[in-house]
Amino acid sequence: MLIRVCFGFLFCLVLFLLVFTVGELNAAGHPWGEEKPAPKEIASYYHSAVLAGQWYKNTQNTPEHPWGGMRESADLGRFIYSHSPRHDSRRAIPVWGQAVGIMGFLSLHSRTGTKKYLESARMAGNYLKTLQILDSRNRRNFGAMRERTPQDQYSITRDAATGGMGFAALYKATGDKEYLYRLRILCDWYIENLMKGEFKWPLFKYWFDADKQRKTGKFKDHTDVGAGLMFYYAYKLTGEKRYIDEGLVPLCEQFAKDYHIKPWKSRAFMEMESPWGTNDDFASISLLAAYRATGDKKYFDAAKRHVDWLVSVQQKDGSYSGSSAAVYVAGLTILEFCRIIEVEGMNIDTASYYKTVLKGARFGLTQQEKKSLDLMAYGGFYGVTNFALNKNTIHHRVTGYSLLFNLRYEGKIDVPYYSTYGW
Image 1 (cartoon, rainbow, N blue to C red):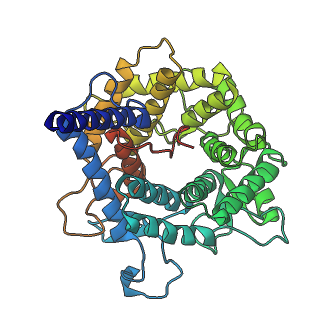
Image 2 (image 1 turned 180 degrees about the horizontal axis):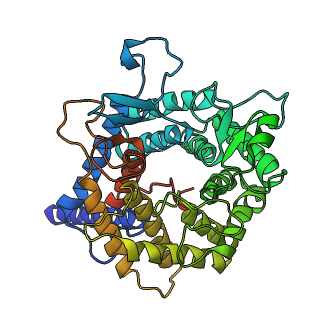
């Protein structure tokens, strides 16, 4: 009897370890390569993500903790964009940041099972809804997202697409069809008025007043390639291939064709030189999505050129010049790139890529504020002031991306946001 009990215990233990290990590696796509960090270091990434989530909790405008004590505000559920302790100055968040905060809360809910994260995500989603135009009398604007407030008269189109990813994330997590409806009409607006309309490419800034748009001009921006992920998620959630054919592929097609070894410089079909440098606004992950959706290797090859460039320009301390947000954009991009290599069994050595990610991950932890008694600072990340690297300003951009990256890097759950997997 004792032998049977011991055998049963050992069998269950082995089964548990197998399930845990396989689940851990498969869920995150082998996030460490061949050189897995020590357990204590892995735990530090989880703790950093939880602390970043606490920053979002502390800075979200809620009935219990209204901004400035002002109750019944139209900003209910909204996050802050940046906080400068030195100048006692803050800015409220735009549409894309609201969506990233939602993805962060949903990731923490998935990782911990804690209900408060889901509730906070839903509240944030309610503010996100207020930015979408539902007045069907003007089809030119129906479904579009305002940039910052319900009174804004323009949309930054790349930011709007991240708002759509927020709706996709909320629908995936809750099954509430209201979010799917809003995602679909945003995609339709984007396709009909930007991809198929007179512009043939997303404008950087889309004015809701058509006359003002004509006077302002047609300033375009390559970062809109990153909007392709919105269409990829819409396709995965609905099964409708038109989101690939009319959204993702047209965005990636010209980009892949004209992409050069030195990325993010002006090309003939674009009208600006990017200020983002190593932060490509997830255009490379959109290229990987196009590859996975179509099987066309040119998209993978274009993404590989950017990933190789990221490896070559990383600083010795693991940072990138210009913005510490680039550490996490690069990390998420490289992890996605390596996962595809491993899943598809490609003959590409990933060792240098994983080393780049590890260096960046370690540097990123040094940018988190862990001592301040200021709740607007505690748990947030420094690193972005006019896109420069410093410790003057706590910024959502770094904080939000760090949360998603660190949970993925911990390796316990499949974080689907800024990824082509898990949908």
